[in-house]
Length: 109
Image (tube, rainbow, N blue to C red; front, side, top):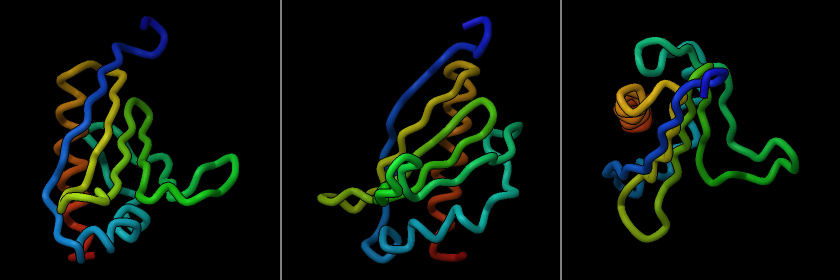
């Protein structure tokens, strides 16, 4: 914990229509210069696994001290947003809020 920080992890669901879920993969690829949680510039955006290039079915976004992954639910009209912060629960809440905002902006481009 001294080296990387205090980890905190959680999943939240954000409402999404079928059309919004279909556009999820397009959202973050265009947002490489965005800031997540007020401090962390986006350092990586993945839509496929790095080892075998298999599609993730969503998108994973990383910053220096956090990451989030968003994928459309196959059974409900929601995005499933998984997030982890290495700066504790308060920072995690900020990452989740920014992830929800970024993902919900997908249809607007």
